[in-house]
Length: 457
Ligand code: PM9
Image 1 (cartoon, rainbow, N blue to C red):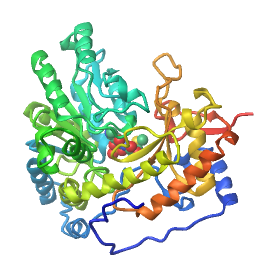
Image 2 (cartoon, helix red, strand yellow; image 1 turned 180 degrees about the vertical axis):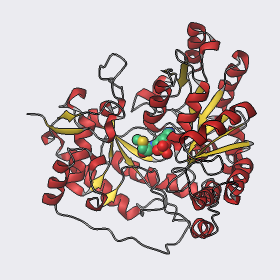
Image 3 (cartoon, protein in one colour; image 1 turned 180 degrees about the horizontal axis):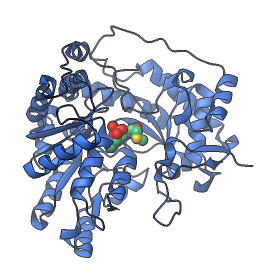
Image 4 (cartoon, protein in one colour; image 1 turned 60 degrees about the vertical axis):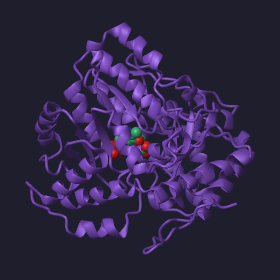
């Protein structure tokens, strides 16, 4: 049963895939310290580590790259990116950065003073790291359903308005740097936020004079869910929904590596000229001139085209249809996955997949490593390892202990999804033999990228 929408493109260039033996993969994972981030990509048959920077670009993006203006200052490529953001997102001021975390770094430095609080709809690793580096404290104000992998809710990424207002009452609006609303919510399973919820957050922000920011990394996918699930949007294009969503925000950070369909790039966009001025001052220090922000002119061109392509209805219907297809194949076979299936990935519920392990056995890390050895499919841990340690140095224990099968955009076919589904289903049948892991090396920040592990005795 293939997904019911064919690819809305045809393939012009191909990249061969190589399948290694199980023994070779076993050696590779041991060399990588059982961390899929440390594997060589050539060892991965189907690489579902991330949807970040892994998209296939279109012929239009590649041709736009050829007219990239590589001038150090005042490049016309920046003007084209700025115009694309203004037209598609409705935000007047744009500052490019090398990728999303570059934008997160700058906005955290601008808006957060030590001791301030930053509510958001679930943490994201790099986002929270920059908020904390700037002296802020992150508060999770997502609805409770988001922390329950089996809970059914059409907009599991929604902000819990009561929790948000309770936080304002507790710490005072003047101590809230801004609220960061992610569209969609990556670590909840790629779950969307409804337009009604965005409007409700805006009302609270207006009442208390709080800045409303967005992590807009997957905003086009969020728009598609609004079109499909929220009353009154069925006949509205995703491009129009994107503009409507953003009309409620003061600004955004963007990792262009996702919903701008590029291999590198990001930016800040905002309404307030004083924030813009500060961002332009800081970008020179950390990224590059305000007209290139650490990117080549050709990268700006590709992003200007990609951010428009990403809101195309036919593209989004196929894109999310493919993710849903994989998720439904797994669900039908009884594999525990986060529900509903999200926009960019299918998330395996490692606690239910490996019920014989406790969270301190690092089940998601172990499952990701085992899936690679069994099939050559690379995935990513999104659980206790990704959550890191709190200010006292204790391991955080997130409610979600997940393995993410992240689907790059326009890269794999539904036949690849079948190979992935078969591998996961097979592993699930033999899950009881999978052992836990323990750390042998742990860096001080963003530990999931480079920690090393060994099987527990
Ligand atoms: N997300 C991802 O694989 C890249 C690796 S970080 C584990 O999901 C959100 C919601 C993201 C995100 C990156 C960033 C940072 C910000 N917000 O990777 O710096 O999903 O461009 O963006 C990754 P950059």
